[in-house]
Image (cartoon, rainbow, N blue to C red; front, side, top):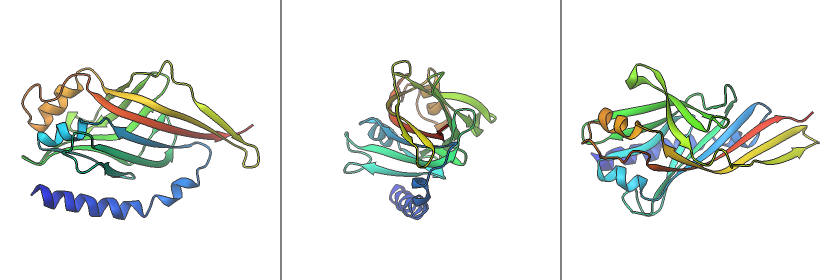
Amino acid sequence: MRKIFLSIATVITLVLSSNVAYADAAKPGQSMTHMKTSPGVASTLEAAGVILYVQGGATSAVIGENVSAATSQVVFHIPVTANKAGVQHTGSNIIFFNTANNQYLTLKNPVIDLAKGVVSATVPQAGDAKVDILTIANASTGKPKITNDKKAKQRTTAYTGSTLVLAPGVAATIASVLGLPAGSLPDGLAFGTADVTLYSKLK
C-alpha cells in the first residue's frame, strides 16, 4: 500500500513540476518559498507510518536515499502567490498522511508572518481554525538581502535560513489527529528551514 501511495505521489509531483516555470517571472506583490525539513524529521514520521507532502500549487521532493534514511529531507517549493496578510500561499497545502489508517492532517494556505515570527495555517480537521503551526526561531535576528532592479522597477527581499520549529502543542495535535500514540512526536520539534522571497515595486 505504501509503495503504491509513494508511486502516485511521485507522479503527481512530476505533473505539478511542469507548472512551476511561471514562478521565475515574479511580479510586485508576489512571493515564493522554499522549505526544507531537518534531517531526521522525514524518517521519524515514516517510522510512524506518516508521509509528509504538499498539494495544490506546490511541489515536494525527497533529498537523500529515501524517506526512511536518517539524513533524508523533504523539500517543498511553494510557487509565486499573492502576498496578503503576510506571505500567504493560497492553494498550497502541507499534508501529514498516516498510511496505516488513512488519517491525515491538512495545513491549508500557510501564512508566513515575519513580523510575529510564526507560520499559521487553516486546519480543516480542527473546524477550519487558524492555528500557529510553526515558530520562526531566528525571526528577531534574521536580516533580509535586498536587491533593487531599477530597470524592472522591482525590489527583491530575500530571507534565507529561517529556522522552523513546531509551535507549542502542535506535535500533540498532529499525533492525535493521525491516530498516533501520545508522545510520538516531541513538542517543539525542529522541523526545518525556509527561504522566503518577496517582490515589491521599486519607487
